[in-house]
Image: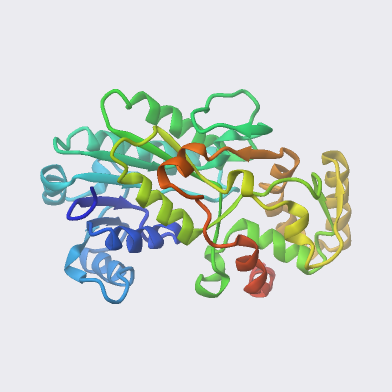
Length: 352
């Protein structure tokens, strides 16, 4: 389906987006990449850096735009090109910061997705629209979470989770009019040696605090599943599932029952105590008092670390059935333990 297809991709300059560019090119697609830039020339320069060696640069075109603006902020000529020639839309742009205020998270996630959906409605030859969400739309749910489940009243850890949940509710309303497929990655694990520190995941940040001894206790238990998928595996699965002839409505891009436990993740670093939520909050207050310089880091940590107190398994049955294999190919523990993240804390602390 993607061989020779023209794909409009948002979010191509993000960590996952860069991997999606590579996988889409391997699948034979021609790409129109919507990128924020001060000028068309700057947009082209940003896109050139995304094209892996060995691929024909002419298969990739930069479109200067902004998904948070109506019509994705595209010039009239570019909008006309999109409407006339695009076969597939893959919307991967999002604000993934856990500390972003809710109104800004909604602008980056809900409003931007609404702009993508409205543009997609005007593409007469559209074969498929892929929306990259997150498995953590499940919020504070616990237990097994199925791919076809969404609505709940359990609440959320942060504005990111809530805004992505609201975005999925919006996407569902367009399913009667558009060929939508939703992809929900779990924790997307970057490779520390290939990503700038400011782009590295919150998970690596927390793990570095554990490694340095600044996080000697964690909420939850050693048996808590922590679903990790490398950015390469996530991108590969999304692209393969995007071209399924009869895809499911929603896929968990996750390890599911194969997810490692929290104990297996932190074991190589040092002994860690596991405590309940109230005790953990008390401990954090104590650490802040003992290390006031690290107060901002503990504030940042509080935006997401309590997720560990709500253990869940992201059922990936649809994804595994349509892929014919598990979503996870790379061992996330080897990626974690084989690439030291020490620079993360050093740069974060030094910047405060």
